[in-house]
Length: 390
Ligand SMILES: Cc1cc2nc3c(=O)[nH]c(=O)nc-3n(C[C@H](O)[C@H](O)[C@H](O)COP(=O)(O)OP(=O)(O)OC[C@H]3O[C@@H](n4cnc5c(N)ncnc54)[C@H](O)[C@@H]3O)c2cc1C
Image 1 (cartoon, rainbow, N blue to C red):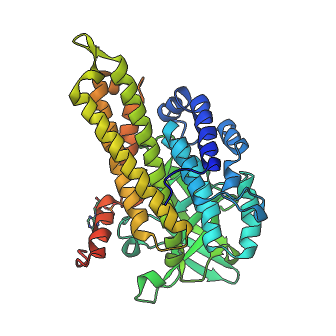
Image 2: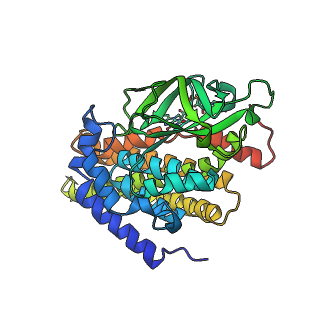
Image 3: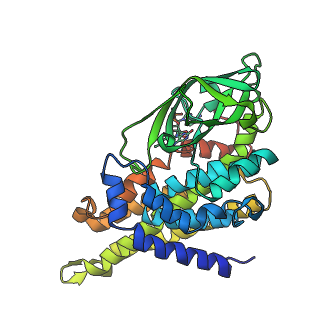
C-alpha cells in the first residue's frame, strides 16, 4: 500500500496550485462570490482553465483527450476549490456529468461525438435530477415525463436547484419514461437534453448564499425535444446508469470540500501566527492550537477516505458506501474547519475581506447536496444490518 502521490500526480497538483494562487485565490474568487450578476466563471477564466489542459484530462486519448485518471479529477477539483468552490463546480460539472458519465454510460457513437468537444472545452454540462417534490426521495418525487414519437422524445416537467444549468449546452437529465410499472427504479431513463435551440426549455437561476459563483437553477420543460440518440444506456434503465455517475459525483464533492478545508486550515494558521493578543501571537495559546490540530487531523481523515473511494472506483469495484462516506466526512470536516476558522479570526472572520466566511457558507451547501448527510448515515447503518428506517 502506497499513500503517496506519483510524480505525475505531484506535478499536476503543483501546476494547478500555482495557477490557483496566481489566478483565482483572492480578488477573482471574492468578486465571483460577491457580484450577484456572476453565477459562473467568465469566458476568459474558462479559456485559461482550458489552456491548463484539465478538460482534456477527463477524456481518454483515443477521443482526443489526455487520458487522466479519477485521482487526477480529484486532485484538480480539490486544488480549484482551495481557491474557489464555485470555480471547481463550474469546471467539475462538465468533466463529471459530461466526460465521466459518457465514459460510464455512453455508446461508441456518443463517445465519438461528445468527448472530443469536452476535451476542447467546447460544450458544458449540468446534472438535472432533483425536482420540486424533493431530492432525497428522488424516486418518489420524480414526475418529469418523456413521451416518445418516432426518434424524438418530448419532455414535460420541472427540475430545481440545478447547478450551472443556465450555462449548460446539455442537461444530463433523469426522466420518467414508463407510467405503468410499479417498480419506480425501472421507469426512468437518462438523457443528454440539448439546451441550445430547444424552445421547450426555460431556465431561471435562484438567489442563494452558498457557492454564489455557481448558479442553482429551476428548469421548466414544456415539450422540450431530445433525440433518441441522446439516451444514455437502455430505455427505463436510467436510474442504474445514474448510480455510476453519482459515485463519481460524491467523490468529486468530497475533493471539493477537502479543498475548502485545506484553504480554511491555511488561512487560520496564517492568522494565528500574525494576530497578537496579550503581547503574543494567538497561535501560542493552547485553545487556538487545539482547534488547528483538530482541523489538521480531520482533513487528513477526509483525504484518506476520499482516496480509498477513488481507489475502489478506479479498480471497478463497488464503492457506493465509500463514495458516500467520503462526501459526508469531507463536507462535515470542511464546515467544522471553517467554523473553527471563524472562531480564530473572530471579528475579521465575518468581514468580506477575509475568505473564511465564504468557506463557511460554501461548505454548508455540501452537507446536504448532492445527497444529505442524514441519508448517507441511513445507508451506513443499513450496511451493518440495521433495518431501513424510511
Ligand atoms: C445549491 C444547490 C445545488 C444543487 N445542485 C444540484 C444539481 O446540480 N443537480 C441536481 O439534480 N440537484 C442539485 N441539488 C439538489 C440537492 O441534491 C438536494 O437539495 C438534496 O438532494 C436534498 O434534497 P431536498 O433539498 O429536496 O431536501 P429534502 O429531500 O426535502 O430533505 C429535507 C430534509 O429531510 C431529511 N430527510 C429526508 N428523508 C430522510 C430520511 N429518510 N431519513 C433522514 N432524513 C431524511 C433530509 O436529510 C433533509 O435534511 C442542489 C441543491 C442545492 C441547494
